[in-house]
Image (cartoon, rainbow, N blue to C red; front, side, top):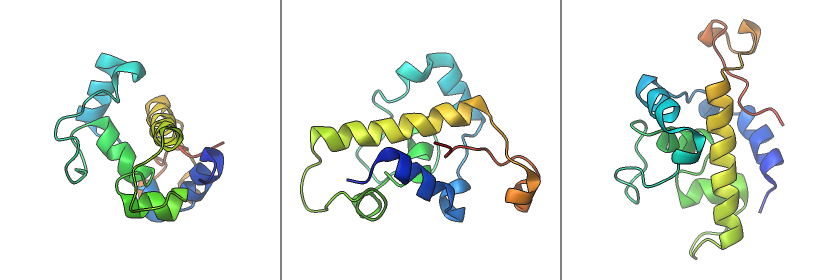
Length: 126
């Protein structure tokens, strides 16, 4: 398994992963429940990971924890077997780090991602 800090740094260099952001619905959900209330039982959990509708779903795509293929490629977790308790803890840690950074709203400069016009978040700092 690749350490969370290394994964977060690699994800921060991925233009695909960096484009994910919490929308108003997910941000309101997070503010209403707090960070401790986020991971518990999102609707439709266990199905194909939706792109929106719950903060964890957005975070799963942003952190490459959305499917076993991404877990293997980005986090070094083998496919074809159940995740270990340590791996599950790693996934939850990475997701919660991302949500926390997203909610802090730390902005990068426009030069880093001109398409965001100064709105790109610094989510993957270690």
